[in-house]
Image 1: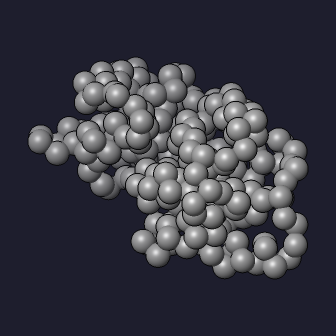
Image 2 (image 1 turned 45 degrees about the horizontal axis):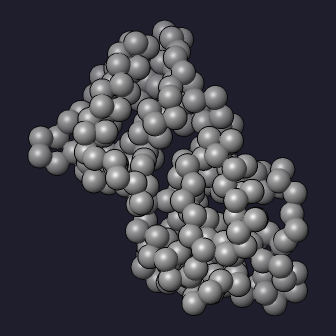
Image 3 (image 1 turned 180 degrees about the vertical axis):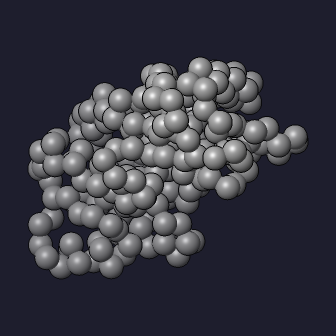
Length: 227
């Protein structure tokens, strides 16, 4: 799962990035509202974490712009202000949840889990499609028809998670590259091909009927025609 963090306090941002990456989140961090807005409207993130007080464009305005473009990515707002009016303004701007600084790490992670379940329509940290399940906490891929399972690497997990979240849609190589490796990455499309091959082998290993199909000249989609 890829998160966008827009936070200008360097120490807090560094600590949050470390914590989130330890929890298997992919994190892109920006320190100002202009770059944060550009990243937010790219629509490649699963959750957006927004500080309110930012240089150039504040978090409220970013949230409004995201919603005006029809992007439904869950937004968690962070602020040092605890006043009710600020919370109401944040929620009215399009935020889904609100966390006042200082906060405990456990509370932040719990709120992110709740937002991710809402975004992916999943419960108990398990995604499912066709004859496979994907445990979002252990990265275990399982086939429900034979109980075979295997642990995925982080990149394999993110590829399959993205495909499940967009089931029924064809994802281009560019979408996959930006989603899995990030906006600032120099990853080439060859990376997508390599890790797609790895992920297909894991599906084959658990003998799943669910397959990643290549659509010539377009990209990939997840299919399970025989279940």
